[in-house]
Image (cartoon, rainbow, N blue to C red; front, side, top):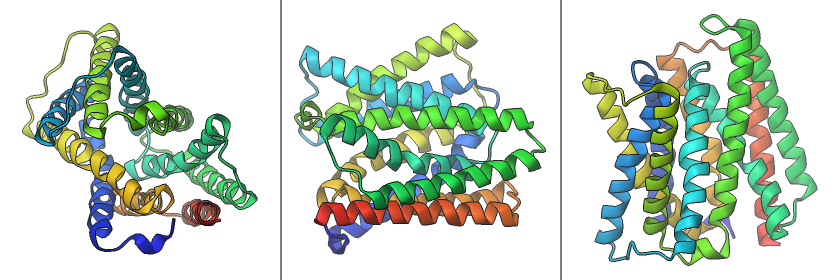
Length: 304
């Protein structure tokens, strides 16, 4: 699938997804405070599920699913909208939003390896080499963060890295599920509405068990952030991204994963006073360069 197909109707969805998902990381950071992270995740996806249901009905697709399809959506929802986001929100309590975005950009690696395991997709040497370079870059960034930790202890930085890695693995499992034959039979809006609804229900159960009853933040900025993450960061972007994959292919669409951390790191520099060092700069260059190498290898494989 050639990247040349990113023209006309493909450019606007690409830009919207990239810009919105670049900004969601700093908004998540503002959610961490009075309200426990699990309740914030629950509120976000409860609203997003309602929004996706409205979108499904407006699109003329049915919300009715078989028991097997609902079980599938539930599994996907727990992996993506419960485990993944609970871990990510907790990781952001110890790291800048830009660094979390950069770690999440490595999603391409487990996606490809799991696709190889379950669907037999070939993994090329160029992809493995690029992935290795990207992982080295991430390692340098976390060495820098570990050494320079002020607001968080080095142990917290190491914990955040572990949480981020598990979050990426959970998201990757959900991504690979979305490529399954069963997922292809379910309209995207219906799939997301059910997955988000079940995921938010699991979030509520987990939050109540671990932190107690719902906590309400009176600050208007908090609820504006929840709405932004739910509507712009979920209802708008997820369907656009799926449509983008259909228009230009998964390979070219994945270039958003390179652009998003660049913008997120810029936002983090402006609003979180992220301090750049030679080690941090080298880490970012290696991480992004490695991802470009890996993505180019995937594109050549798709064209071949």
